Each structure stands twice: as structure tokens, then as C-alpha cells.
Image (cartoon, rainbow, N blue to C red):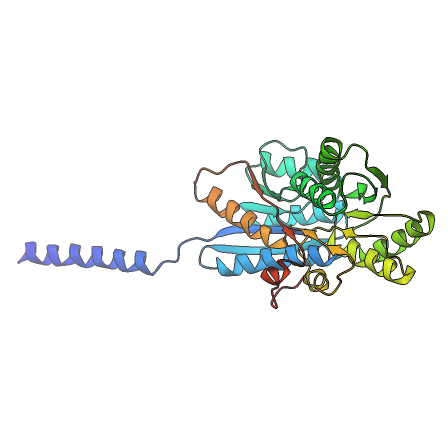
Amino acid sequence: MKKLFALVLALSMVLGMFALSAGAETPKYKIGILAPAVTHGWVAGVAYHAEQRCKELADKVEYKLYTSNNAEEMTGQLDDLKTWGAQAIVAFPQWEGMEVPIQTAIDEGIVVVNFDIQINAQGIYLVTGDNEGMGRASAQYIVDKIGKTGTVVALPVPTSGSVSELRMKGFMDVMKEIAPDMTILERATQFTREAGLNDMTDILAANPQIDAIYSLDDETSIGALQAIADAGRKDIKVITGGGGCQEYFNMMPENEDIWIASALYSPLMVEDAVDVAVAVLSGETVDAVKVIPTAIVDRTNAAEYLDPNSVY
């Protein structure tokens, strides 16, 4: 009888432990998101899609999202995430000066996945679009539309660091290779439609003949197109862009005088950065760099990229 009682007691304890184990929640990964404050529709898309992906992974992810206006503010937010116990941080370090605080976080054992921006830090993961490929594709597109000679205005954005540098490199490399006699004029600008409008107004006044515009950004292109319309110019046959702006996509079939194009570089890519963070924390082997290829969107295929739910 005693043996039977002991057996029943032991069995009850095992079943009880099993029930406790089954009822316990699996610990969630703590992931922080650091993004710039919204100065541009594309940036708004980054923060939005990063948060949406974390919500989709709610069964395995707990997250905090911060936006900042400068490197000092982002550094403070990074410290807050450390205090919170973040195991991984998905960062869009648009501001210069983030190298040291991000390296410190990595050295302390935090997984850091940079989105879009390549910085000098050892042990970082990077998810990015193909910036150099965007430049190459845009150069090829322009040459296909206007030929191997003419005047092209390029609108780099030096303050964006590696983004502009790589896009300009790809563009110039292809131009030198396939259209060495092309005249290329450069004017530094910003990734905003206001800058596109103001800078293009000045450029048009100074240049009576322009065949194409190599813009690196959809918002800049929207402003530039407004300047072209205001000036009544008919000489420009092509303008490129970059990003994935729905408003810009809708303009493509509406204007038959200018080939409006965009090298697709969607903020949706940040979802891959969140997935990389989760994969690393799960112990999976992950490539240090994930480059998402680009694609050209123009009036021939814009309908395929329209998304009524997009915030950008």
C-alpha cells in the first residue's frame, strides 16, 4: 500500500511539473528599434514597418521603438535600451557619430543589426538595399532613353553618407563605361521635395538644355518635377528616383512627356532586419550582410507596385 501511495504521489508530482511547464510562457526576445525622427516619408515607413514586423512576431518578440533627431539623442536612447535589457537592437543610424556607442553595445554582447547605413563597427549585421546597384540601374535607364550623349544633372546628397556615395559610384561607373561623352553636372541637395523644388529651380535657370536628371530619391524627384512644370521646360526626357513612394508611382503614367522612374528601395526592407535579429538570437547562422536587390519602376510596371495600405 505504501508503495502504491508513493507511486501515485510521484506520478502526481510529475504531472504537476508538466502542467506548470506547459503553462509557462516562453521568454520573449527583447528587441529595440532605433530610427530617426520623421523628416521624410521613407523614414516614416522604416519606423512603421519595423514596428509592424515586431507586432507580427508578438509571440516571440517584446520590443521598444525610439525615434531621434540627432546622434546624441539616439545614443541616449541606446543607453535606455541597454537598461531595459535589450538583447538585440535594429538601428537606422542616419546620424554621424553612432560608431562608438554601437560598437560599445556590440562589445557588451548585444546583437546589432544596422538597417540601410553602413558604419565602421566590428561585429555588426547589415541589411540594406543595393545602393550601388541603384546607381548602375539608373545610369543604364537614362542611357537607354536619351542615348550616349547629352546633359545629365545628378543630385547627390553628401549628408547621407554611404547611401549617396554608393549610389553616385554605381551611376558614375556605368556612365564612364557606356556613355563616356555624357556631360554630367552635379548639384548637392537633400532627400526632400522642398530641396528638389528649390535646387532644380536654380539648376533650370542656369542650364537652358538638360536631357535627364539623376535624382537619388523619390521625394527629391517630386520637387524637381514641380520645378520643371513651373518653368514650362520640355527638354528633360528622363528623371529617376529611389525609395518606393506611392505618390511618385502614381505620377508615372500621368506624364507622357518625361520618363519618370524609380530604383525601388522600399522601407519594407527593415522587416528583414528584424528577422535577422530574431534569427541571430535564436542561434541560427546568419550572413553578416544581406543586400536586397533593386528594381526599376516606371510607367510600364508602376501598377504592380501600388499599395493602398502603404504609409509612404
